[in-house]
Length: 190
Image (cartoon, rainbow, N blue to C red; front, side, top):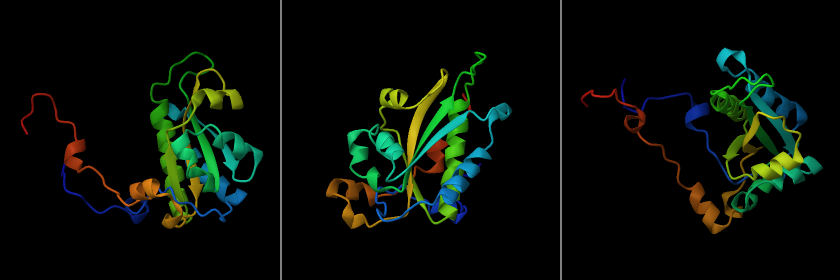
């Protein structure tokens, strides 16, 4: 397989995990529904569909609760996002079966949501800095389901509204070369 960068669809190559969201943008319920519908159609191992979501639109009590579960750095910028989406994965079914692929499948669902958002002219940023215990206290999360991330969704905002530290992180977008991501077969020569 070639390790040379190849062209991919602009919805993928131009995607950007911004921290600058337009504080005036309102995410319509129908648009939010399409984002979740895209996630729902994501592939999953054995069609287990282990992803679970909670959507919180800015300006609602649900948003205040989910926003309160974000770690400090994320609270500095994520409040301007039009919506926050909690993503969780069912790692163990109610029958006790372990779904070792659940996190991957939930990640694929987020990827589908991300591409749909890009097609809608929206941007997303996935936040790993969340207080899992606070999320568990706020939501009815069944046994075997693990909160993974929160996804901020909205329209691109003005980078100048970010503080200097956050803005500096916005100005760099880099990916490792494919050659660093390919795992060699044990004992194979380079």
